[in-house]
Image: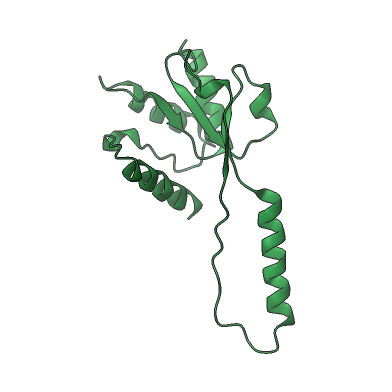
Length: 149
């Protein structure tokens, strides 16, 4: 469900900013990047049509790294020809050339919030029947992969 939620957030941000993209700009990798051919096919689908995306928002580390490698192997310059932004801000993001822009989730705050929620449930005197969904805002860390010269 996290992929669907991220996609919904992406679509809401596009709508909020009056940006419209063709349906084929959204590609889905069923295996989350574990099947490299699936990632390559998704990238090829994006690069085939006359209208190509300016940048890619990649929703998992595995898809991000495989896309990064594949684009470079095809001689496609990042960010000159296409920009990239990934998720999670893993340690490798700064080590890549160019360094990778990322959407960083507040991992520590997420863990702390979850632990507090669990403690509330454990300490509750009555059975808990109402659950709360808490959404914590991410931070965009802009690096070289999304900066066009």
